[in-house]
Structures are given as structure tokens and as C-alpha cells.
Length: 151
Image (cartoon, rainbow, N blue to C red):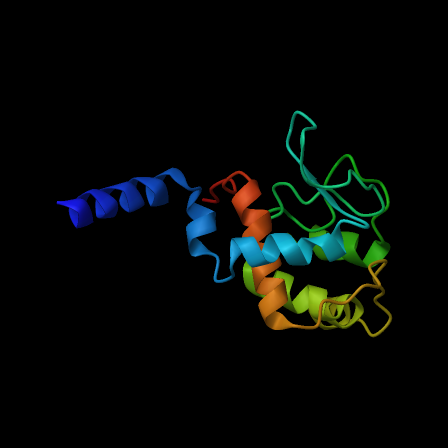
């Protein structure tokens, strides 16, 4: 009986989580710890402005709703570089695999995606460990709404 109740409770919890949080391959709790490195430049603040993670830094864009967001399009952030805006103009939207590759070496990522050896990134920080990047992605997803469906 106890095992059955535990299973039901776990199932209910999983259904209550946003769908994208279930799809992430990283560890949310570990990602919260690694996010401490990101909060120097980034915040995760909901649509009402409530800070969910970070210190309300504005050096980089708010990461709330990053999963599924078109690159370089967070309207309240005006400091995007030309290369990330060019990537966004192609319709490129963030997913886990691209996020992990991007944070490993932002300039290299943009050069490859844009096929432009002159592409630059304003983000100089690199998160070299793939596991850390996956964990941060899972953390960001856990605090973000589900991405809009694309038809």
C-alpha cells in the first residue's frame, strides 16, 4: 500500500512539473548551484519581474523563457551583439543541445551556425563542462514556462 501511494505521489508530481523540465537531461539542483556563475550577468525573472534566480543583473538577457525562445529576441534587453541577432533572424530557437554547445564557446558556436568566421559574441564566459551546461539548462527550464507550440 505504501509503495502504491508513493508511486501515485511521484506520478502526480511529475505531471505537475512543466513538460520541458521532464525532458531536460541535466540535474535541476546541480544546475542551481552552477547558475551562481551565470548570475553575474544573467537573471531569471518571471513576467511580473519577480526574481526566481540570480541577482537581477542586466549585463546579459533575462533567461526566463529561454527554452524555445528565438536567439537575440528578448525585447527588454538591448545589448545583443550583431551576430546573435543575425542568428535569431534565421529563426534559430534555443534547445538543450544548442545551449550546451553555445555556452562551451559562444564565439565558436556563432561562427559555425552563421558560417561566418567574423562572427563575434558579447558573452565571453565559457562553461566548459558539458554536464554543468546540461544542469544549468535543466535549472532554467524548471523556472520557465513551456515554450509556445510551433505548427
